[in-house]
Amino acid sequence: MPATLAQVANDARSLAPAERDKLLAMLIHDLHPGEDLSAEEIEKAWDVEIGRRLEEIDSGKVKAIPAEQVFARLRAKLDEAD
Image 1: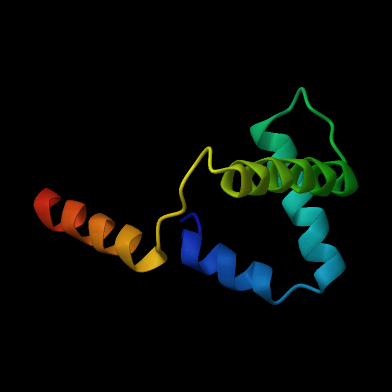
Image 2: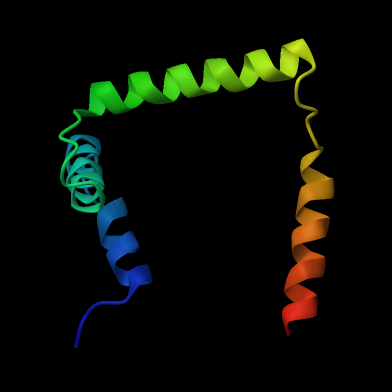
């Protein structure tokens, strides 16, 4: 019987940080096999994306929504789905 997601996640948390980093890289590669990006390249791409998003907020192009409001909307949608 295959392991559940919770079991796999729990097992992964018991790995050393360097092993978790390697596991993450392997999983990302599996999702995007044509893109052989290193952990450093992925981190750099996230840094660029974070900078872009912060610039949009600072310039007023987008407006931040408080987390409480976002979670309330999500809870309402989940309640509707039940």
